[in-house]
Structure formats: structure tokens, C-alpha cells
Image 1 (cartoon, rainbow, N blue to C red):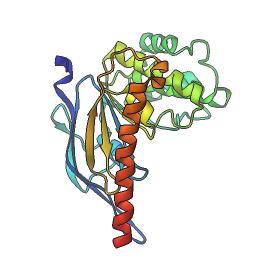
Image 2: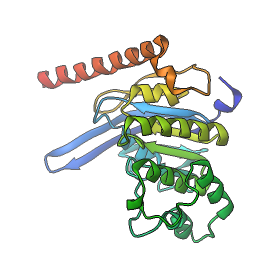
Image 3: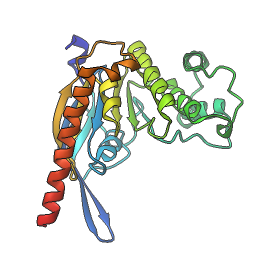
Length: 266
């Protein structure tokens, strides 16, 4: 573990969340405590419906917790924070705005002047130079997500939260995006928390992987990923990588089985 990955950047303490529905309360998170270290790439995985997205949205200040707290650099988060940017599965580009205007939106919301030098550098980095006048419908899914990444990084946040950002992309584009975000993370040193359903994606990207239990979501285990960087896509075919995937998959399958057993008893 390197020195820069020992300081806590984002902390979750005793996070529990209940949703009220027409049929009663849904217990989404149960007493989750987690530290995201400064400069690390943390992935969060678990069975469908285990509260991964609820946890991430709470970290972004977009969901209130029923109990517990989230803090960045010791400051409790009660609403969206200027040092935290969020990237969703859908690129969420406004269809009536061209790419350039979509990227400038966060600056407009803050009432500040767009950082053109930074935006231009990021557009060049993700291969979108020359597409500023294009509207979202004229861009592929991968290009839209690249634009979403530029929009989030343009305001220079210290923390990037990513909620299955590449889940809707085809396998080849997803590999390209994983390589891109790995490179950007290595270049910028941003703190990233990344939710995914894909175990190989988590192992490919992460320093640590948080495995959550079936609902109500708890932290079941945390895996350290000690694979040297940069990691090529081809590493996913190597025996050691496949063994890691199977180990985590078995753990998640066991948790899913336990949930089904509890449901049967209930």
C-alpha cells in the first residue's frame, strides 16, 4: 500500500437506509461503514438489489440516509458537494444541447466561467476534438459516455463516483472505456468509487473491491487487488485473473443462496 492511499478521503459511517413504499418499508442498507482512501480506485459489487446504487448516491449527497453519515475530508455531506462528481449509466446529456454546451452545464449551474483550456485538454484526451457542435443523437453510446466523463472532470472534482457507467455499452466499447478510465485515473490521481455488476470489470479497475451482501446491503468482504498497473485487457484471460473472478463470484452466489433460504423461512 502506497502512502497516498492511506489517507481517508470519503468515509461512510453506520449508513442505513429505508425506503417507504405502498407495500411497506424496504430496508436497502444496514449499518454500512466504509473508507475510500485518497487517490484509490474502489469498486463496489454485489447481488442485484443489494443497495450498491443507494450507497453511491448517498455518498454523492443525492440520497438522505435513514441513519449514519457520509463525510469528505471530515466534512459531513448533506447535499451535492462541489468536490464530488457523479457519472451515471446513462450519459444524461441534454438532447437539445450540443456536446460543448452539455460539458459547460456544470459551470453554468455554478455561475462560473467554463475552463476552456481544461475542457479542450480533456476533449483531446478522450478523442472528442471536433465534435463540439454535435448533439447527443449524433454520437455513439461510447462517445456520449466520453462526453459525460469530460463534463464531470471539467470542474476538477477530487472524487469521482461512477454508477455502472459502462453497463449499457457493447463488450468492445466497454473494454475501450475501461482502459480510458484506468489511464485517466493514473494520470489525474482522482479518488474513484465505481459501482459495477461485472466482477471482471471490478478486478481490472480496482485497488480494492467491496463485496456487498444481498439486501439489506451490508459489507460482506473487501478484496485487495494487487495486480500491477497499467493492466491490459488481455489480463482477463490469464488463469490468476479467472481464479479471482471465480472466488468473488462464489462468495456472491453463496450470499444470494443465503438470502433465498431466509426468504423461504420467512
